[in-house]
Length: 244
Image (cartoon, rainbow, N blue to C red; front, side):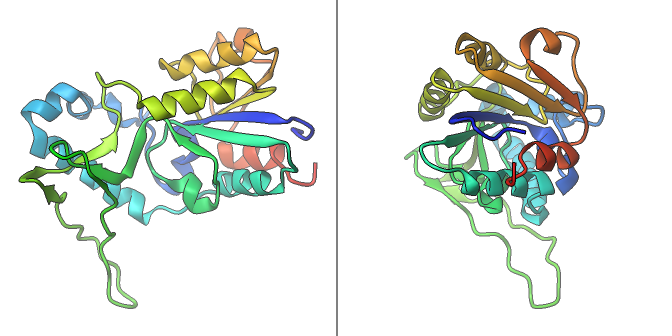
């Protein structure tokens, strides 16, 4: 369905990783529906309750370590590999789970950062802590605590409420959207700023704009040229079929 486009930009959200066993953030069972968890996802909470915030995200990281890329992740990676130059595809993901890369996608912009890397705010070094090892044939559910560096607990390299989008990610997204002829939002309501403005940037280019999401919000039909409701694992392989 999407063959022939030359400058493709995707915006992916938590709905893409839901079938991997990872919760969404604002859906019916979303993490941020819990006021306590939502308060912990704030830069002010990091300042005053650093260990609690870092421990919460470390638990999220442990869940991510047990997850595998979904059918949808793998379909997007296959579509990217099948593109013929000069066609390009940029994935701007709001997810922090690293599943796009594990599925084989290369051109990924982690707009909200990632839980696979952790940062020291004293010296700004960024590390990827090793995942816990388990003896052969056994599962290991025990993940050590967040690492220390320069005498304090390292923080996740994610964008908390109240923080700015990283400059490099912002630049990558803007450059990709500036020239796109196809914009596809997958597994996201596309209503949370600043990513909610992406569809309007694509519209300025007269790009085709497709929304693939479990639910379609009321205003979507005014912003997107195509709106299709359904699970990502069903819609993405069909829309990104490599034989098309």
